[in-house]
Structures are given as structure tokens and as C-alpha cells.
Amino acid sequence: MILARNYWKKWGEIDIVAEKGEITHFVEVKTVSRENSESDMGKVPRENLADNSGSYRAEDNVHPWKLKRLSRTIQSYLLEKNFSDYQKWQFDVITVQVNLGDKRAKIKHLEDIILS
Image (cartoon, rainbow, N blue to C red; front, side, top):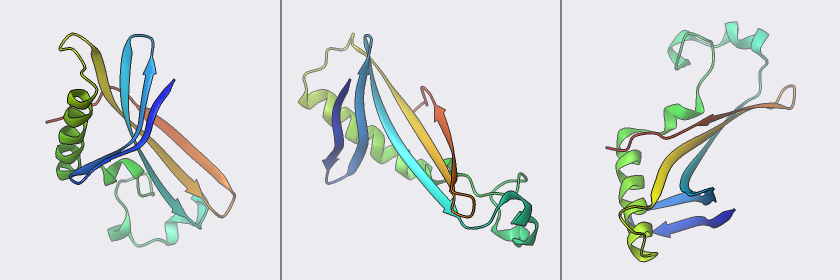
């Protein structure tokens, strides 16, 4: 069940707050798009690639400073909603990589990421 969308504080925003079973999930959604297909990736200069697979990964946008801001925002939500110290919660990232050329998307759900 979705509890909140775009929960905002001046120091950060949580895209989705959801509950599944007894666990509250704080979810960051990151999307990247490109116009070329996998076969065209050989034409992209190597210095523009984030990994050796030939594509920029959406999860690369979850930087350490972003994690710090998310952690603070999650703590604000927990305090505001009077969560007990015993209630379970976790931080997840959903990545979406959209290929505009063939109108396809790859979605990954990265679960229970540790916040510093």
C-alpha cells in the first residue's frame, strides 16, 4: 500500500513511501533515457560510459550526498509519523533505463540499501 508520494522536506524528498507486510519501504526512483539501441552503443565515446556494459546506469545517480539527504528525510518521516524504534523499515531504489529508440525500458529493484 502506498503511504506517501513525493514526501518533501527542505533537505530532501522521498519519491515513494509504501508498506508491504510489516515493513515500510522508502523508495527512490531513478530514470535515465537514451535514444540509441544496444547495437549503437559502440558509437558512444568510452569516456561517456559509466560501466563496461556500454550504458549509463540509473543507480549511478544515487551519490553518497544523495544518500545522506535521503537518510535525513527518512528520519524526519519516521519522527513525524511517530514510528516506534521496533517498526521495520528499509530503503530501496528502483531504476528505470528507457531506450527511446526501441521504446523499451529495463527496470531494476535494488532492495534494502544501507544508508550511511
